[in-house]
Length: 197
Image 1 (tube, one colour):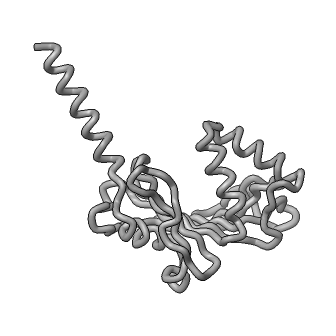
Image 2: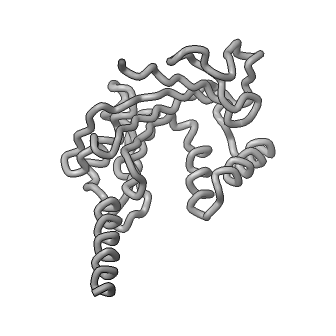
């Protein structure tokens, strides 16, 4: 009796894990990935996502400067992103390091060394990343419908400081732009709109 119950629990856990890791068709991934990009950039953006094996691939080649990332089906909740193509070497290097098993800190430290040595190039101009998220229950992977999504903005300004930008290093009020990781290769302006009501 105990063995049967244990087997049942294991099967249920396996089914839940499998359901959470179902990879939506490319069309759905593209439809939802571009939600992170400005409306006038969506149609012609490049989209990266997942094939049936879970490999990260190019789903659509675009013709403008934006690269959109599909939701990772292995993670809880819904999160897509879009960024300017000049950030791609930095972003791709981070993905590759994490895939190789590096921790977030180790990946950041390695990229810092590579940027300082000139092996990894960061954009010389301010460059934007958009992140669009929603709770798991507000995302339907079968239809691509997302409700109550939340968009935040990140503007990379490598090595910028509070003194060089006039920005605070923490927001005084909700929605206020502020500088995160000042003085580093990852320095960026965070703009997180105030939540609705």
